Image 1 (cartoon, rainbow, N blue to C red):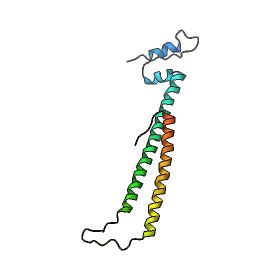
Image 2: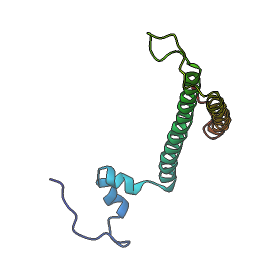
Image 3: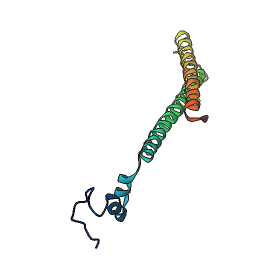
Image 4: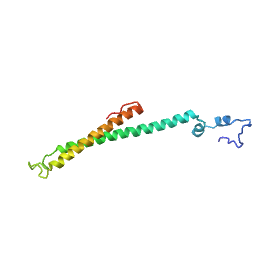
Length: 133
């Protein structure tokens, strides 16, 4: 079992705080002895990793949303009969509503693509690499 020092180390003690600390082992003591440069570096790394991951997810979510909107728009083109037994096109088709939905999705897609381009540019500027998808 390690000897536990019971005396208090002061500036006029024969044993300096550095000597006592150098005898102590473990991550806690090592953490206490880190310099300002190491602390700043560790904090910067943690912030950069969090920011990069969050930005990447943001861009990936935008890519997924655009794909879904494109699928929804393609689904509007499907005007085939409801079942395989009939050749009759659905009688409840409302052309005006269909056009409005098709155009609204087109605008949403275009807007999302522009926002995605801006986000990709920002990612490249901030993190020095392009993001695919």
